Image 1 (cartoon, rainbow, N blue to C red):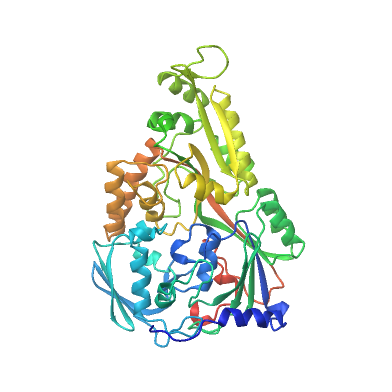
Image 2 (image 1 turned 45 degrees about the vertical axis):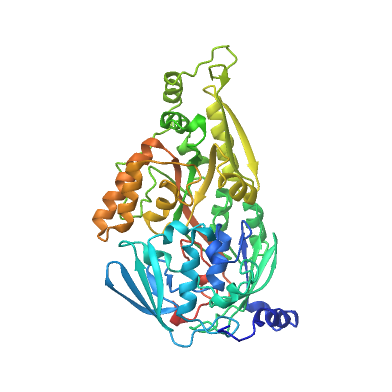
Length: 513
């Protein structure tokens, strides 16, 4: 084994905490809506996992709040040609157990990520990486199968220790990284406790202990924050709580456009939803204005396509169907659905028009949006039913297995138009849970990631967005806003990140910003 240092840092930190070495004023308690599914950054699927692993691990770069790639494990890089990127690592890098971090670890991280058998959720984001090679201990070369414009946006992926991983250690529950924090303990479904690392290249954060506490209900989380049980909370929050918290002078706040969408995922592999015209009819029963402005009380923005309005690729002329119950009823009739027996339910060939709307139990506003949409569908004769389950069952066990019909959920961390397109909507994409396939979209999304000038990329994404707005594998209900609230008595200055990441909350060393 190349690395011989012992891996006992996390255990010793737990002992220090138990002995009272960590002072309360140097601690931070962050409220989160869901527990992490894993602490292996390569396998992360949920927002809490992304945000916690961003503290435990460090990538070649980290993204600033304005989404600019900044040096992290790599102090510099260059691209001698459009299909080659060379990174130069900092000298003396170590993981939190004291073992060295070298080019070998970077190679291992990305070789596993791009191995189809590893089944990384974000495999498609790294698919253009043809090979990664260690030129020497501090130099890594990425060889791409084609030019890949979004690459730098994805290289904040945490670097994992190769020897530790290959030894059979479970990084998902016993992570070792090189980031500013280390795992102290993880009480599943309750909290994740992190301690400041003394091995991060830029220095030790000001906050010594970070506890990510899981409070699934949005309003309960806001109440816990107001009661002083939490120091920081952020989206998702219930609209009725946001205004109250913003007016409370005990708290600092940032409210801004986010990097996420709330959308309906249509399962195009389902026989009922395979026809784009059926999806159009259902989409015309989604009252975006009421959902966004009444249920969400205007904290989000009514969406028109899969491209965020803050993106350089946005085109306001690309629009989805809008709320039109009469038009929906007419389209159902054109497709052969009628109330043949007078029971108020549309039917065809003796089968009622039944559809299941689903979402998860942790977000009351999503539940209310689903219930309201159910009522709109029932008003024109659709036997709309609802399925509400907890987030793990809904996401991993239901939607990601393609067992849904119409599911309400969201995407966050949309740092590039590629991030809400290629993996989700290309044929066979790793996150294409609805089984959508369209050759024009495949070609456009491929061009969007391989073209290197922004104008060509924008045109490609607009082409894809036009088709998607018509065929509707996704119906984007809203562009999400982002809200962050914190206790003004915190000992550090809080910097908001529209991705919701935690590094701006822990007093990062100035050289790491």
